[in-house]
Length: 164
Image (cartoon, rainbow, N blue to C red; front, side, top):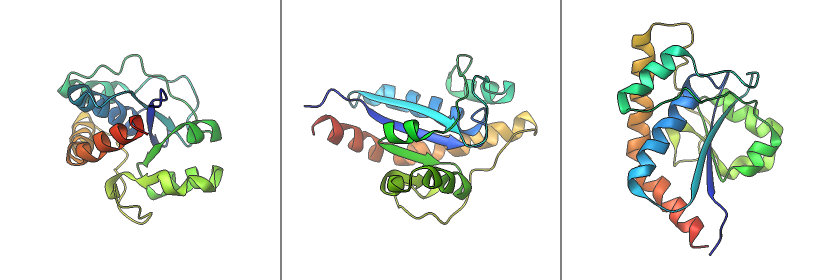
């Protein structure tokens, strides 16, 4: 049995809206499942490091009693890609950015809305930056819907990894 945690990384642009909301939501969903050791984190393709989640992202996440106040953005790096067992990109551009940095990550990198199908062509999760709270709420609910739909797949992957 491995003592390495199964790592899931979400990637968006600035790592202050979509990916922190997805990170928080998946952590909340997995808490109830107790699949074994895992880690969920996020990064951004164009963001600087150390920025908090936007106030509207924090507000939207409260719908599920998720507290994003401790979030600090981090730049997508080869090290983070290497560390992740599963990478979920919020848009085709984010997926491309991951593969530009580390082409060998293709098998573990998915477009968020296409997961668990590994098709790089598809629809992005809309970036709510600069928009009203209602748009953040809409994006958060959409992220939650996809995560909920795919929760059995996440749990299966974590359990398989822990039994490897």
